[in-house]
Amino acid sequence: MTTALKILGGIVLLLLIVLGLAVTIVPRFLDRIYYRGDASDHFDGERFFNPGVDDTVRPPTGGSRAGFFWNMLTRGDGRPAWPSTVSVTPSKPAARVEGERMVVTWIGHATVLVQTNGLNILTDPVWSDRTGPFGRGPKRVAAPGVRFDDLPKIDLVLLSHNHYDHLDKPTLKRLWARDKPLIVTSLGNDSVIGQTGAQATAIDWGGRVAVRPGVEVHVTRNHHWGSRWFTDRNRALWSSFTVTLPGGNLYFAGDTGLGDGRWPAEAAALGPVRFAIIPIGAFRFVPGQMTTGSHIGPADAVRVFAGLGAATALPIHWGTFRLSYEGWDTPPRMLDLLMRCTGADPARFAAKGIGETFEVPVAAPAPVDTGKLDACLKGEAVRALP
Image (tube, rainbow, N blue to C red; front, side):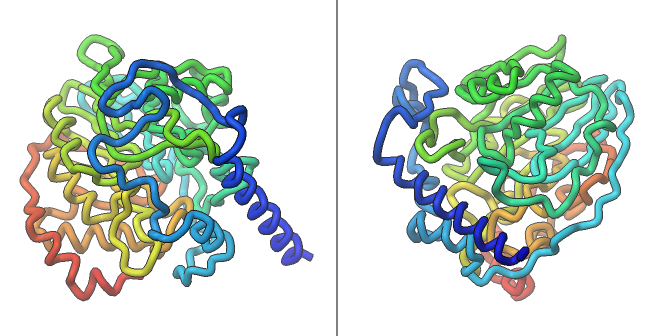
């Protein structure tokens, strides 16, 4: 009976996908408009886009979008097995961390708690079990690294874009009811967030929001796309963030591909990056793939790390929700091999366990020789990873 229900559920989901694809060419009343404003170098008056060549439009397999969804649904692409559950020991963070100390807890996927200067900062908060419309979509294999009720009062939320695995309306509703944090996002996402009753400050790339004297959030460029439904593609903007802080800046890359590769230096121009949060997963949708237009894999994550000139970084966007083809722990294993191959200290950009709390030192950055990366990618140990 359970198998039959799963098959029926799969058929229903496929029909919804087909319906969603169909409505992209019909009635405009099914569209969603999240933002209206003047055209710019990344907004054509209706939709946002990545400056230069935009490589995020085609499915990451290079095939058809219908084929991509069908393979995702049926798992007919030969993907390696993932664990159904991963053991997590939740942390109980301190109420506050004062002064220039910086304490970080990886909660899972792109959700990170950063505590410093008496501020509790949360990135892309997601506590839901599934990420997708109608309560469907990828299911957690790892519980949140901090139980919601053990979360300290949140002062600042950085919300990168409107995909379901980053903008989780049930979580935002709970956070707003409990803490009323300052929510900073990019243009248009405030419309979606507002559906929860929460209020967000939405600004364009290059804008900034004062948090308190000496602390500002800068909304910075990255390379991605946005959608909550099939007809609303790129109606809202995506972004990264730089938080200027005494003792060195905090950088959150959000969800991103490499694009022109110049945006990390734009963030670094705002001041030394003490700690960066950089995605490394969901980069492989066909065997051997190392990156997509929408997501950086470990190799491009090292390039971003080097471009930021960051002293320390945390790899995220892996091991929580299955979004792609690679093995469960392939992203951090590959990252470690590539950091070592370039001659960089792997401890500067090393994976942590979900729920693990660690202290970020005040440290001077050291250069990373990205010129070796292409050769490193051809190494037998890297190529053997599933």
